[in-house]
Length: 413
Image 1 (cartoon, rainbow, N blue to C red):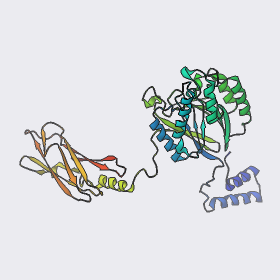
Image 2 (cartoon, one colour; image 1 turned 180 degrees about the vertical axis):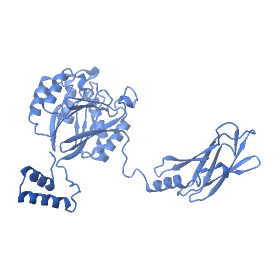
Image 3 (tube, rainbow, N blue to C red; image 1 turned 30 degrees about the horizontal axis):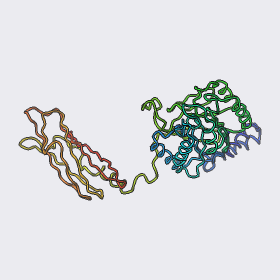
Image 4 (cartoon, rainbow, N blue to C red; image 1 turned 60 degrees about the vertical axis):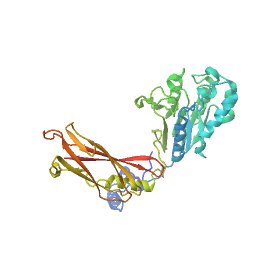
């Protein structure tokens, strides 16, 4: 229930008590005073009691490690309260214990930019199973040594987080009796939480006992369930529960975004009793210093002041003995010398443009009103049905050593 303001509470009492006589007159006067008071139309801003956000990562498995590393840097930049990854963090699928330990060290190095942001792992099949996907108790022990329990829960603010293992011992593809018994007891003890959120690796639709598991989630008011494994994004709702499948950089079957195939992470937020999440595509987050002041000024000035006139009425074209003369006046207000490339595009083959259809000119830093001449000529006696258009491009070298291109168009109207 939302907190109400003092004015709202007063109005509620006045109308619920139904005063009469002098009490009614007093009530009306008080309501009028409240309505006319300074700031009566303003909304009172109240800080939520519980407000935080967290990140959910999907499969990585060292597929596209450069992309995954950048995603971790992005997550570090936005600074969530915690990060959860829903399994398949390493390649695994080997019985070589030394190799598995090495892979976990490599994965921890990938997470280094998170610094002090708490990280909560979910075991996936690649994390705990051996060669050919067979159960391997030694690999489960290594996982416990590295991360702790294979299934567990924790509270944060007004939310309860539950992590399950869909490959526990010899029970791959289901939540077995041991976990189910623990789960029901855990959920029963967490009924007072505003949000119950569940995380595991294999998709809900792949679990043998998904029906019983879903009914358990409904009975205890689970808000959302997150998982991975199939390497694409998917979402559906059933029984008031949101089910979301996510994938960080795990190898995808296609590169079609409409099929959910794109590297991403999930950003989820809690604001008191409100819960929601958004899908953030990889490389969508920039650092505060992403744009250098010199580039900001230089590129903007080039874009706005490079070309004195972007179009000219055809009736104002200067005619010559053979055709028409066009003068483009260029300025370079940036702090670096630039090369300007011109490409004329005639509407038909009855035009000639000189000097050449492609030409370039160098503009010194700070130069103004540099005149560049072109001559347009008809190759036959016909009247023009359309006029050549000039495409202008200026490569600009940023302070980070990257080329960007400023583009302009000159037209004859």
